[in-house]
Length: 268
Image (cartoon, rainbow, N blue to C red):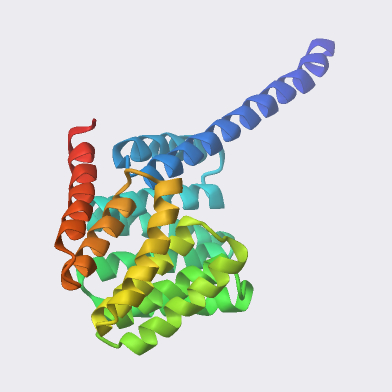
C-alpha cells in the first residue's frame, strides 16, 4: 500500500509532463505546417499538420486545437484542388467546434473555410451563404478583428466573381482598413491589396490597380518570397503592364511568376 501511495503521484506527474510535451510538440508541428503553407510548400505543410492532428486526436480528441488542425489540412487540400477532401476536413472541424463552442469563432472559421471550397467548386450561392454565416458570427463576437476582415474579403470575392464590383470593393476596403490598423505589412493586408487591385483592373483603372498590386508585392517579397502568392502578384502586375503597353516590363513580371512555378514544380 505504501508503494502505491508513493508511486501514484509520481506516475500522474510523469503522465502530465508527457502530455504537456506532446501538446507542445503538436503545437510546434502545427506552427511549422503554417509556415510551410505560407511559403507554398504544401507537401511539407500537410505532413506537419497530419502529425499534429494525430497527437491532438490522442490527447484532446474533441478540442478546438484539433479542429484548427483539420481546417488547416482542409485549406491545403483546397490549394491542391482536392476539394472533396477539403470539405471532409472542414466538416470534421465544424462538428468539433459546434459541440465545443457553438456560435464561437471556431464555427465561423469552419463556415468561412467551407465557403472557400464551394467558391473553388464554382457554387457562388453556397459560398456566399457560408461566408455570410461566418461574417455574422465574427461581427457579433469579434467586431473589427482580423477574423472579421477575413470575412469581408471573402464576401467581397463572391461579389467580384458575380461582377458586382462596387459591392466587392466596399468589402475589400473594410478588410483593408482593419488589417492596416491591426496588422500593417502583413500577408493578410497584402491579400486585400491584391483583391482591390483586381477590382480596379476590371474597372479599367489600371494605375490604381498597379498601385495596389505594388503594395502587395512589397509585402510578399519581404515575408513570402518565392511563394505562390508572390507569383500571383507578379502575374497580375504583368497583366496590367501589358494592358498599359509596357511590354518589356510585363514580360519581366511574367518571367518572375513562371520561375516561381517552375521551382515549386521541381522542388528546387
